[in-house]
Length: 105
Image 1 (tube, rainbow, N blue to C red):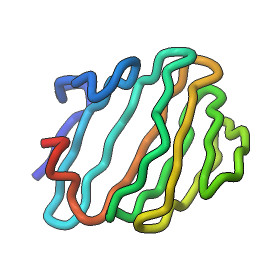
Image 2: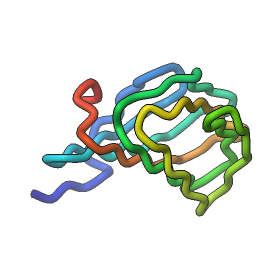
Image 3: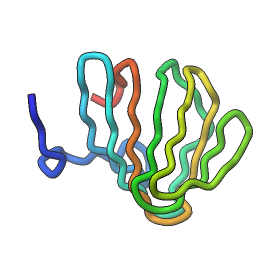
Image 4: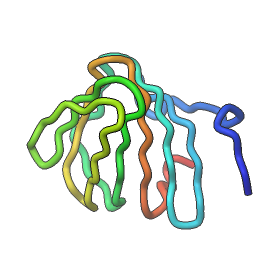
């Protein structure tokens, strides 16, 4: 199977987070366009997650420790680890989840 990111419809999964979702057999990839000041409240999930900041500046809290991330930065989020975030500028992010995020289908 092959896809082109431009042809994937964007869904607003939460306020200010517009995602294009790609699902494989055992993982999901989310390509986010994030509005400035959009926040993800603290949460956790069973999925392992890798977040890659593609553009912009993103404030991210993992297990109570807050850092500022910029283009090129990657954060590895273990299963069931509490995390939250806020876009300090308009951002583009890529998240990889394993296993598949069924609720994003």
